Each structure stands twice: as structure tokens, then as C-alpha cells.
Length: 125
Image 1 (cartoon, one colour):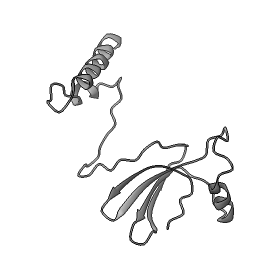
Image 2 (cartoon, helix red, strand yellow; image 1 turned 180 degrees about the vertical axis):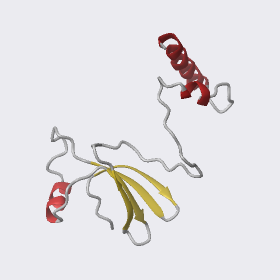
Image 3 (cartoon, helix red, strand yellow; image 1 turned 60 degrees about the vertical axis):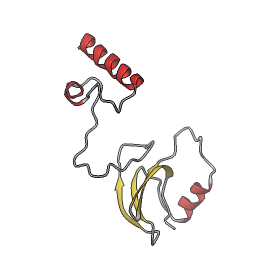
Image 4 (tube, one colour; image 1 turned 135 degrees about the horizontal axis):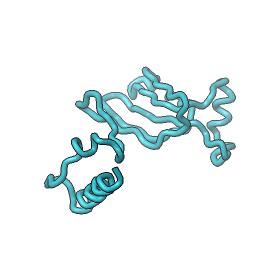
């Protein structure tokens, strides 16, 4: 079983691998005194924020990505079959070109919220 040097925040599976998000502890000590603190001390390890790829057959961490300057992750999602995915900000010009409306897959609430966001962008520049 893999030791994860941080608080586990999100997990996605792809084949024989788990992609696990780990976060550093909050500075307000909300989660202090948990067994993770002792394990980190025993292994002389520092908590980190990043992604770990764990081989489910062996339990070994086979890849990792450390995110410097980031303290917490909130979830992990595997976007299978995607190349170079991007995140679009609500105040960017890309949202006008990338967000489609009227698809039968969307429910009314999603379309309505998206229209409000785009309308607000149009009104606020």
C-alpha cells in the first residue's frame, strides 16, 4: 500500500492505476493531530500538494507531480481521450467561442445559468 504524503483529496481510476490528489495541511491546524502527522514524522517526510499515480496491482507510486505554490486540491478527474484540455475563465473571450447552448444533453438550469454568465460578461466587458 502506498504512503501518500498529504491529505488525500480526490481520486480517479484509469485501468490499473489510481490518480490521487494530495493536499498540504491547512495553516489553521484544522486537521492537526491526525495519524498522518505521525507517519510524516516517522518517514521524515514533508506534506505536499500534487498528484500521485498509484499502480493498483503493486501499490507503488509510479509517477508523481508536485505542485509548488499550491496548498490544496479539491478533486481529481481523469479526462480520457483528451489532448491538451483547457480551463476557460468566465471573463475570457474563449467562453463565447467554446460554450455551446441548445444541446439536448444540457438541462434547462445549465443552459439558463450559462446564458446568465455570458450575458453578464457581455454587459461588464
